[in-house]
Length: 174
Image (cartoon, rainbow, N blue to C red; front, side, top):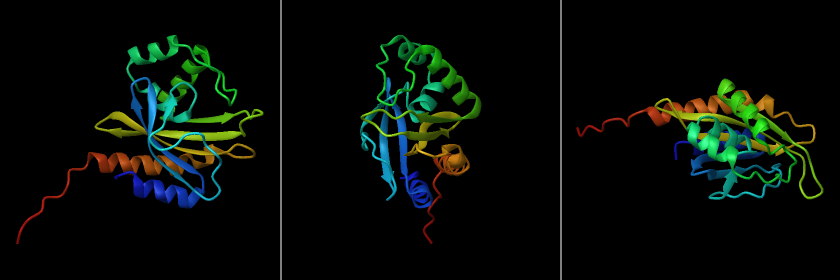
């Protein structure tokens, strides 16, 4: 509920897919997905699971997960994603380091015969200092620059993080 108004603002501004993803075991769980009228096709729906090792949201979440989970994901088979993003531990470790350093990650996927070019950016949402979710935009990859949307994503993620940390106002009966 806290994130929805901010996600709606992002959809209005970008007309693209906006996702809110949380960690669910060794996968990411899309808890909310809003799509604008220019949004690219996505094979994921709200309440769908996504791999942690090749999506911007998944990598941001994995970067802030426990070392045990990181190593378990890196040791597991990583089927090649349809977008031809490298699915190997060396690449994933580099992406995790960048996500930890920047609190955000941008990925541009190479199109294949079955998938269009897609670009995405994700930022971390924190509650009491811990990363609890990732907010991302997924857009057409042809000519797209998701880096340009990082400031808007950061502002929205900061607002959500701030609201998650607030205690509700006390209601006083007069």
